[in-house]
Image 1 (cartoon, rainbow, N blue to C red):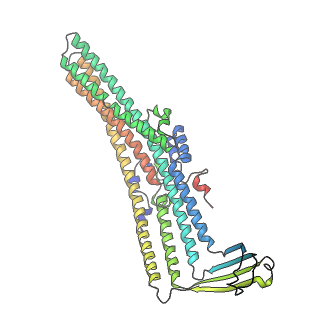
Image 2: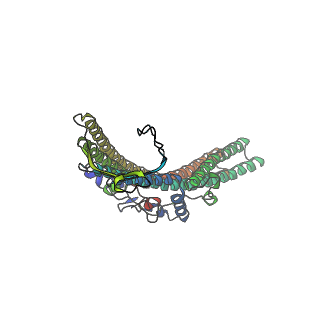
Length: 453
């Protein structure tokens, strides 16, 4: 099992002004301060189909636990058998006697109890409890995934809307430039090549809009399904969003110890390991005898004597079963159960390492993308100044249109790159929150809480 101070300490990638070491809140999406997003999250938590499936899995695990616990109690059986019977004279060795039909009744009750002398039932209950814990952890994993996917779909729709707005502004900018070249050409102060080049760039920028519209529509469809609605019933309000949700504060990330305690996939792996360990005890108990105690009472007879003492019979006894001397089957089961434990140990360590890797990677990517945005923002500012100067000189006749075209292309490219990076940064934030494992420990009634004992 992983034992390292670095795994429980501060994150390497958190040494950045974009992060603080306070634990992330359970409702991390509220950091965006976006009421629309808050409402969509609540809809998804109530209506998402994956959560309904996970909730049903909890109910099934609870039923299995009840079955295991019932083995601790005596089992009872009651049998009632009324019949209208004619006995065979030949069978009764009375061939010359006419035996009339009679009403025959049989009433019996039995009770049996397995003495859990070697802990097999107790360990089976322990395994079922661990299975239930693993199922609840799996529900929590689905829950945080639904929250992240809903936020991601909302952000993707808004980001696409923002990129569309930027592209439309670029088209409008280039359209004005095209109009200027057309007027200069009509006045005899320009050439047709300048008009053709201007129109070509305008069409090129316009061509970037349809893919963005498709991306927005796909995000809207996904958001509708995540919130339990058909794709055609996507939110028209979200469809009008043209601004990425923004965080106005550093992201709280906590440390490795809190991460491993918070991530539901780590808890799931821990419960799986616990269940596997308990199954070793179940298999080991097969090496020893099973002892059952039983009592049975039965009354059989016609209606005239059915309840009399002479019709009553009973038995009290015990049953001992033991796979002896051939115990190879039991020992093979123990080896198989122990191998399952070894695999569960490996899985647990793998999940822990994977959680740390995902978080460190998400921290590093987000920080580097913020650095890239600073450079892109400066580049965009310089490109805007160059485009403005080039157009001013072109109007004064001190520059040819090819320079204006190149400056406009640089500005448009900078705008598009900045908008695309903003979209990626928004996605980086969601990936980071998902890696941090928050979103399941929220207040309010959920399907999982309804199944808690």
